[in-house]
Image 1 (spheres, rainbow, N blue to C red):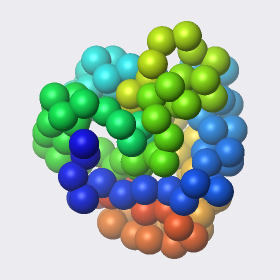
Image 2 (image 1 turned 60 degrees about the vertical axis):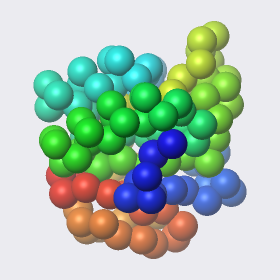
Image 3 (image 1 turned 90 degrees about the horizontal axis):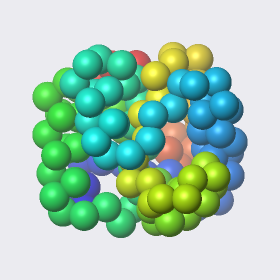
Image 4 (image 1 turned 120 degrees about the vertical axis):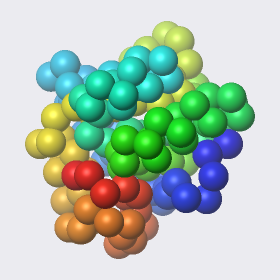
Length: 132
């Protein structure tokens, strides 16, 4: 699992996050799957990473290393890989997703009144990382 340095969203806020993710997906600004998410992090395309709560230890380690190295902010969702896949209309499990457009990142930040690019908590959501 992702360490306690990752932060989470309250369950009741999840539908709003799914809505923003769905918009990003339809706009071609959401990358899903751990391999593609990790690649987006390393290439500097990932502006915010959203992570399922039940990812494997191996996937957690790979993502955590990339997220810390490239200082990409991330949220841990109170949703399983299966729930995340269902919410995005995917047939395969979705362990993580990367938002590649600052407009969609800002939508999520605005949902929770998050203004800082440092570790912040407000309205039940915390984004970890230095880059916005």
